[in-house]
Image (cartoon, rainbow over all chains, first blue to last red):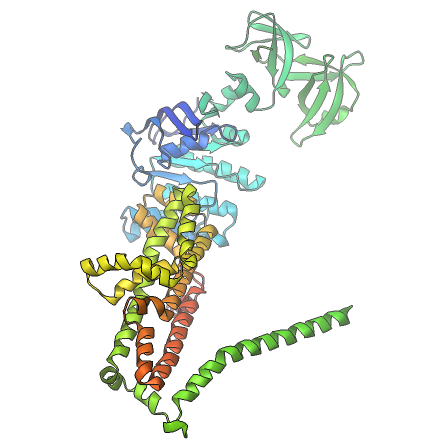
Length: 350
Length: 287
């Protein structure tokens, strides 16, 4: 597990519950974040990830459970006393202030003198690459620039924890990717403990030290991105993170036999003579075979790689990832044969 | 086709001019009539500026028409206090409802719009017992009329502030400010109010307009504002009363014009802001 420099503060959310009108947004969420760590909370809409972040920020009160930062219980401490920097999904720059004034705002509230404020503001705007835009108002900045200023504003107060509530979701794809990398660079530079909420798995996997996948108010799995992807502990995680094929297999102990080959099973897999094995598109090999029992349904070129949809004899459609140079060789109706590459997979009853 | 369009445009232009002329005539005719009346000589013969010269002499007005001075000061005070009280009540309430109690927004809207349906005379009957206590406990200053006036301006002020609150993302802005360490008071003062500037000015504008023209409630509560003073003066000196009426209209127009002049400018683009910027630019080389 790779951790950022340990300059930040530890965060402990313990057994948080929050119910809205009979629906549990948080159902016993427990999450521990190491000092300086960048944790992403990933999950579908309504899974409780934003509620968890807002409970940590003090913008929501949990019904029960505790919020600890740096060993201090902040559960009932108001938001303005928590010392946390937050970047919101919606553009949140104060429209009547320039970028510089926005960044200075938190420092002003902390009673910093003018010289300190100016120096810190210049440093922060420089950090996010907007030092030449300091005197612009929000409406004069693009969406990406506004979110950078919001990040500078949040970091200027030297918060104990940086909270990012889907800050990239309103941006277009290219800006999103740029800003995502920039957020990671800045976080590594300043070393602030960071909680990043997103529904975009690529974003989460790209920037976080650990990714927590949430479902119906609970944390399904918290692990480094590679582990989360290659060794999902639950069917939900396997389904939610990346594309997954469900292939019927014969199970013998810790091995599953499928597609004419076998794969080792991950801990937590279903046992029994038969199960559905969750196999990634890149975990299957496809090749032309005149006597192949599977047939190509479609083949798509996706830039960096290609994707082939294949129908196997029992009628199941499987998605297989291939090199972008190979994809043009497959045409609908081509007979093909499939085999597992041997990556460990999770089996579920079915 | 284009000929038809040109004819239609000509008809539209002609209609606009006719409508404008009728409107201006409707407004101007009574004012001109009033002005004509104030400049008539004794017995309606000839012209004299005596009435206007009397009003220009402030010391004479003060000594000869003390009620006028009293009414004028009361109206000006009410025009200052009423918007302030209204804003103090409405802005935090509406912001809080929007942030924390959105389910109550319909109720608050209903309460605020209710005075529209209540005639002034009914309002006075209802407020009578309340004012009896106010006078008993706090004295019988004319300024207490501002409480009744706040009720009267609620519907207009509510609409104006509601439009302002809808135009900004109050929740996100206030949460951003809170996360940066701002207390609720600071959020209101530094974030919400500056972004509601136009709405606040518009609500104040309506309040001032209402206060400067209010007569019924003041009369029924036996309080002397400018309108009541003019009404009473009209019984003894009609020309002065009418002339003061014209001046009051001009005064109200100037106040409202000044407010709209300030209110119509967005942050950083007002004439004052432009003036400040040009001065700053002029100073820069010297610095």
